[in-house]
Image (cartoon, rainbow, N blue to C red; front, side, top):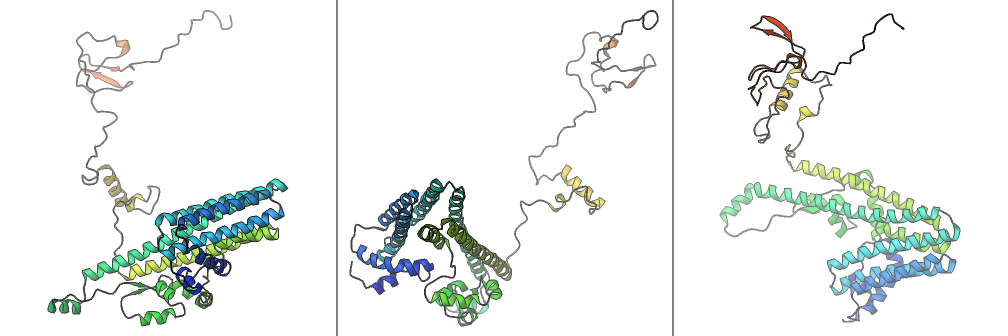
Length: 433
C-alpha cells in the first residue's frame, strides 16, 4: 500500500462527526497507529477486532484484583482496547475490505468486553470492601449499556422505516398522477426525459452542509420535495442549531454523553481517581438525561412523520380485522338505544354467511320432543318408577300433572330416579319412653 500522509488518513478514515472522547483522545493516536498497521497485509479488520477483545479481557483481569495499581493498569488497557476497536473500522474504510460479518463481530465483542469488565471491576471492589452497592452498580452498568445500544438500533430502524414509507408513497403518487405538462411533452417527444426528482430529507442536507440554515436550504433546493422530520424539535429549541454548528466544526456530535463516554467514565476515570461508585452514578444519570432527550426528539419526529403522511393525502388504514364498533360497548352502558342493541344481538346470533362460512348454530340444550331410540316391546315398568312416554310423545318433566284420556284421571309424573326415602322407625307409647 502506498504511503499516505497523516492528513490523508484522517480524511479517509475519520467520521464527519463522532463522540468527543473519540475525537479528542482516540483519533490522534488511532490514525498514527493505522499508518503503521496498514502497511502489513496480514493485519485485517477482524484480526484487530479480536485483539481489542483480548486486550479488554486483560483489563478485566486487572480490575478483578482491585488494588490501586491494578486499577490504573486496567484503565490503561481498556483505553488501548477501545483504540483498537476504533482502528478496525478505520482500517476497513481505508482498505475497503469491510464486511457485514465484521460489523456484527465488532458489536458483539464490544458487549462482551463491557460485561466482563463491569463484573470484574465491581466484583473486585466487592471482594475487597464487602459493599453490596458494587453488585448493584455492576447490574446497572450492564443494563444501561445494553439499553443504550438496543435503543439506538431501534430508533435508527424506525427512522429508516419512516423515510422508506414517505419515498414509497411519493413515488406511487407521481406514477399514478403525472403532471399534465410532462404528459404532453412525453407524448410529443419519443425520447424519454430525465427521471423525476427524488425525495430529499432535511437531515441529509444539514449533514452535508452543517453551517447552512434549514429554511435557506429548503429554498435553494429547487428540485424534488424536501421532507423535514425534525421541524418541531428545531421550532421548540431554536438554539439547538447554533450549538450543533459549533460542535460540528470540531467533528463533535451534539450527543455529548453517549454509550462511549459512559464506558470511559466507568472503566477509566473512576478507577484512576479512586471513586468508582460516584463516577458510575454521575455518568449513569447524565447518560439517562441524554437518552430521554433523544427519545423526546424521536417522538417529535414521529409527529412530523404523521403530518407529512397526512399532507400526502394517504388514505386511512383499512378496518379489516378490527373489532366492530358495537362490540366495544357493553349492555350495561345506557348510551346505546334499543334498536342498536337489537341490531347487535341479531348480528351476533345470526351472522352472515360471508362472515364465517363454517359457522354452525349450536343445538338446543333441551329438545322439545323426546324420541326413544329403543322402542318398548315389553310391558311398562311399575308405576313406582314412572311411566315412560310412548315413542314420539312429548316428554314431561318430573312433577308435572298429566291428563290420562283413557282413565280420565290426572296423575303426577314421578321422578325417574327419586332420592331414597329414609324410613323412620315407628314409635309406640309416649315420647321419652
